[in-house]
Image (tube, rainbow, N blue to C red; front, side, top):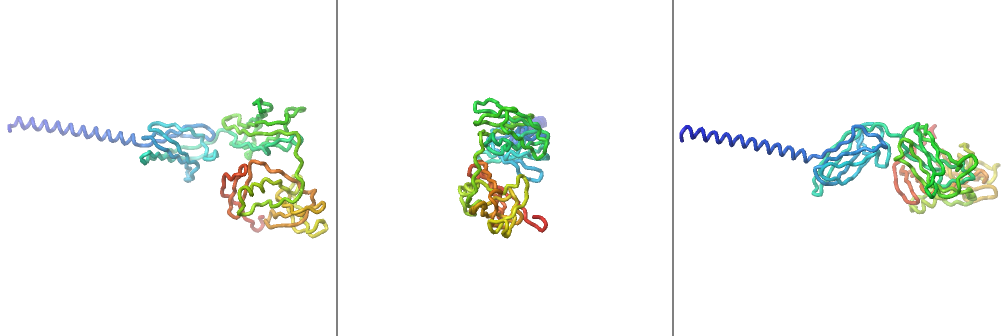
Length: 379
């Protein structure tokens, strides 16, 4: 081989090597891009406000099911949400609230997101953001009763709690045809909320007609979170239940939910203290000259009426301070009966330290509670 051929051969090999290097670079670049495309990306606005719509953006490399976990700085999980997402960009609506619609305290949070494909492949990503304050909104509006009696309308009220103090709220009453018959505005100027009282009056001389209505309450700055409930208006308050043997008033272990609900829905007889929390004696005999067997605070203890003797009731109750059982006599005129609200019932189990919520007789939730413990000097 002559020198010229060697130079030609060398030049050809160099070109091949250069081409190979370029091809390798292109392959690596393509692999890098493919790797980037395979990543899951999640983002939110830098600052989120409670009770305010925002978007969670999920850039997914594939179709699959997304599981989103809302976690605070102490690793407490406040929300688990499952959504089907498609490959590409997905926008999910969120209002900055927890799993039960509860407001999140201001501070740093993150969404931990996992997307799982039909083939079982998983992609993960995290989006950090801050929750800062909240839009003034109505958290709840609870009526004292689902019926307003016009002859004692002053007893009816709506307990309203808002996300911030000094929140202007509106209350509106509509009839069955959807016509607005009454409106008013109130400022919730207390951090613990306020009670809006309404006696059914439309003006100084006219009252609302008996019938079925709908009441709505909302923040003037955020009508999205309007609370609506039905209200029945009747002319006269039903006669109070007569005092007589009540049967058990506290559920026993082993009872069915139906038996528990039956006890919850009984009228509750308590000592009428006319708004005070005075103590009253129970006597060993139906006479105030007999020996006192203990004291009860009015309105705080339900009384199981065993029987009646003339103007006296023979009752069983449990001391507010110590929880011990008392059996004795009290004058019937000192008792007042309250009928329960028919929608909800709450059962507190002091042994297991739980609170169970019933709705229309069905058990819907149980949560842990702490009822406290009596200590010396603190009953």
